[in-house]
Length: 218
Ligand code: SAH
Image (cartoon, rainbow, N blue to C red):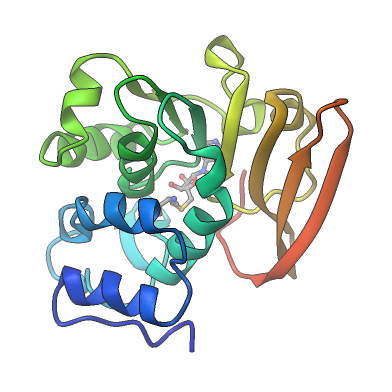
């Protein structure tokens, strides 16, 4: 079911993700609707297919159903004014959706280790309604090793990791606020998407959501 959300156009893709119960947050759906995936997929790709697309440098923009699942799991931690970190921001598509959700009073940080991808993502985001957040400094994308997070701008209400870590990186857990939530694929040959909740007292609760296939966090 999760791979059947293809659309003839972007509105249809987003609507199919909602119909299949993947994109269950109305706020996430509203933000996603404003960031056309076509701007983040190279010429010749299939932006409205529910499948990953090659973006160069060994990276892919994840499948829309994975973006939908991750947005739904994080939606309560992406309220206006909150802080979010997107590790392995790649195309910048999901980073832009996060930025619209936390808005002008929030803070969005993307971290990606390939400089060309950071450049491309900034060019693409400038063509979307999230572009103004780049201009006013509430959205920043840095070239850095995402395993270390981005402590200078933390701690964060929400952390999304777009590449699979062999083990849960301590630095990222440390950069979560109390009541914060991280969604991260963990594993090597087989991977699980894990929700990491930091409770009020600072303790950690992990919930395994589903088996997944992501490119490795190197
Ligand atoms: N959410 C992104 C996913 C891109 S694929 C999207 O949908 O566009 C995963 C990305 O993680 C790749 O761009 C890859 O270059 C990046 N990556 C892998 N290891 C990394 C690391 N240690 N630090 C930062 N980025 C990393």
